Structures are given as structure tokens and as C-alpha cells.
Picture: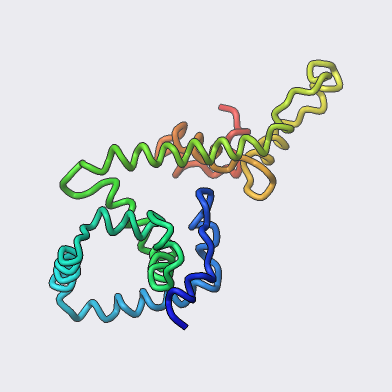
Length: 203
């Protein structure tokens, strides 16, 4: 079966496709093992010459790194379903290397060109995550009609609200909670904290 025939088996994931959704699924084990094996082989070779060779091949076919990354990263419908491109793209998206690649892009050793773009992108991701979480806790955050009555105040358990908001899997806001914790505590405070729920501790 040709690549074109195989390609018809795949559909355009659409604008709302999340490539990270199933990044740890067992079906991606082959990509992870293959990457590990390739790393082992690279240790005994001249890696720089191989990278230069690939880049020169890109020059020969009229591509550079920005264009290549854009097209491989769902940049064109024709490349979404291609079997080889799809496999290599998945290998990158589920790889252990991806987080460190993004961190180095955010804080490269010399140039500062990518910092603004990645900070803007990170902010967009954070805002989207928090908005999605807040959508799930609307009922919890709404003030009951009898909230200020004696019964309402007596039945208001802060501990329960904190648990519902902070624990993943309960329709809470774990991303927002983790962010607030990070920006309201110093490194020393986080290291010294021995309480399971420090927000309940006074003083």
C-alpha cells in the first residue's frame, strides 16, 4: 500500500486537536524506544556533521528550519496525513526531549530572540488552561441565596472548597491553584512547608 493510500486513513485533526492528550499512551512506546536507540547510536558518531548534512539537504530542496518545523507541525493539510511525517511528528510530541527543547528555546545560552515569543505563547496556554478550569467550577463558586444566613455560614466549609479546587480529578482548578502557590511562596517557604494544605494554616 502506498503512502497516499495510507494517508486516506487519517483525518485532519482540526484546529482543536490536542497533540499532548494521549502522549503517554502505550501505543507510542515504539516511538520512545526508537528515539532511545537512536540516542545510543549517536554517542559514538560525529553528530555535528550529520546535522550539517541534514541542513544542507534542506537547502537543496528549498527549505530552512523555520519552514520545516512549521510544515511538520500541522502547518499544511497535505502533511497532516502523510504516514512518515505523522510518525516522526508523533515521536517528537510524545518524546521526553520535548520539554527540555522548549526550555532551551525559552532560555537559549546566547540569543534572546525567542524569549518574547515563548513567553507570549506560555501566557496564552496558561490563560486557556485557567479559563477551562474556571468553567468547570462555576457551580462551586456561585453564592447560594442563603449564604449569609446563619445556616449558610455554618455550612460553609472552607476545607471542602479548597480540596475541590486544588485536587485534579474533582472538577477543580489544579493549574490555577499551582500557579497561585508558586507566585505567593518563596523557594525557601516551599521547601520548609510540611503541611498538606498550608492555606489552612494561620500564622
